[in-house]
Image 1 (cartoon, helix red, strand yellow):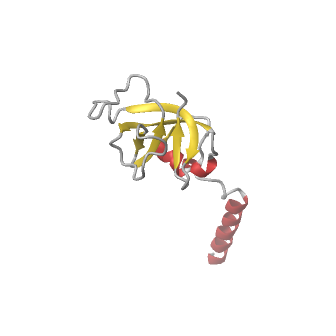
Image 2 (tube, one colour; image 1 turned 90 degrees about the vertical axis):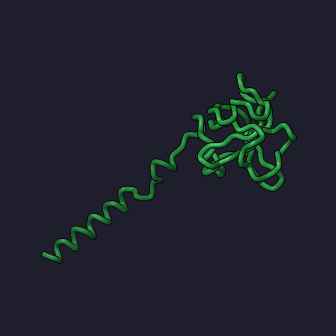
Length: 130
């Protein structure tokens, strides 16, 4: 009986292996053409190329976000956050957002469309056309 259970177990493992256990978990399958939260975008940054169009979602943080580096292009660059991930955005803020420091719009969820860019030291950011 033990030998039969062992053989069934081995056979089952072989079938699982042949059946494609090398596919990515559902959480790793993303569509590059759909809006992404910035934490997902940054997790999968290697799938994006420079100047690639991207639509991102997150919380508008103005200049008070948690990005650790300096703004990539100008002092007017602003931060977008989600789930402890932070990215700079260079360009205008979304329509209807008040960019004055202390605005009640800080923390408001927004969606932006821009191009993927990288700083000289390889940090990603998004450039919105003016």
